[in-house]
Image 1: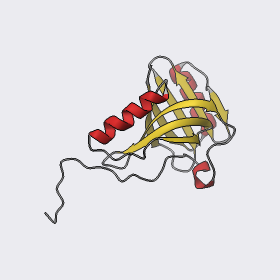
Image 2: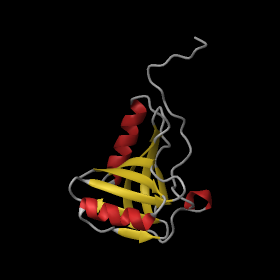
Image 3: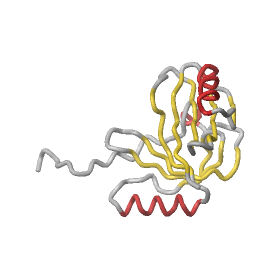
Image 4: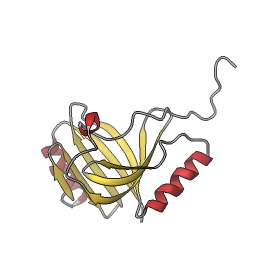
Length: 151
């Protein structure tokens, strides 16, 4: 079963964990410094919290799948529809080993399509990605239905 992932930036992780624990009647599935995630059964949701100065904003959105072939199929479907993706990547992100692909909407919102293959001890594979979220900066958003002003 696939589930939607909502990754939020929060200024007070403890307060956010307390709030979302009550809101969804469940405790976090994983807690690390500056990070928590919930696996909510009803409604099916993966809620991820990143502590940082930009509280109240969306970090990224995602779709968590059960198997890597679903990520590969999604990547192929997105590309066939004219969207730019990062391609399939095996990585460590959000304290998990993952197979993932990313796409960016016209407003710059990052979407991750992924499967978690194992737990990991680190936030990411290193560098600046460890600071908050491992989402790549690109690809550039694809805007469908707009014309280049030079045309």
